Length: 290
Image (cartoon, rainbow, N blue to C red; front, side, top):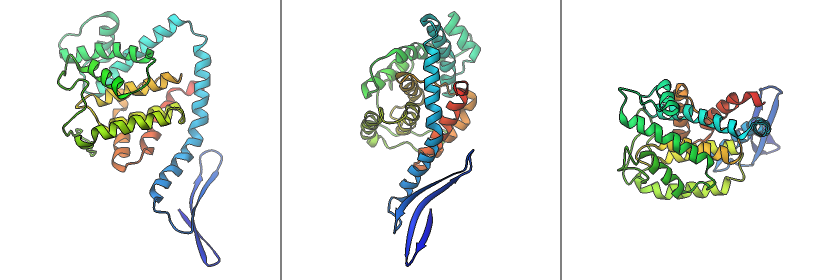
């Protein structure tokens, strides 16, 4: 923020001098006094600067991805989706503590070979997750509380039936995180607010930003006793697919930077740290379309 004096009056501005590529200056006039919502305005100002870089790249990815997909025969698209489902299932399960290796997962899901000396819970959840993922991707019904509760119930009905598909009515913590999820007394209100936000913004925001924010906002509420990460990553890819954008697989090896970005956004009540992490990974993953 900068202050400029003209005559006997001070004037306040948000100012940023971008040094990426071609130098560009950004400025927003605030008024003669610093507004009470200055922190929120700073966040929106920073987000708009980032969007100037993201949006053209995301639209280019979308255009070139669709052009490529139109050339691929349906049977090959199905084969590619199943291959993605194996890796995505491995990574999303492993991030949440599954003991199955990538090789275990491939043998289980592609060849039907059950790995020895692995917990039955991990095996069942892996099989169920892949089946559910493939259904989620082909599902025409849009996100709603009932839809997401059905997904969660499918994921955990066989391994954790006491929490499957149920919003929590107790408090929880996140191991190793400084962030404390909201009290159980706020869960219903927050979840309803989330779906109101989603329905308001689903045709306004770029789909990649929508998917990223849906992930962040829902996992921050932490509405289920367990499985919030897996559920939100399904939501993320459901949104990307709905708008014909390529899917994203968050690699197990990136889990620390992933958790750090989530925690920064959650503890600072600022969406930008996670958005920047997400966009950087997405643009890197699909740089071949740029």
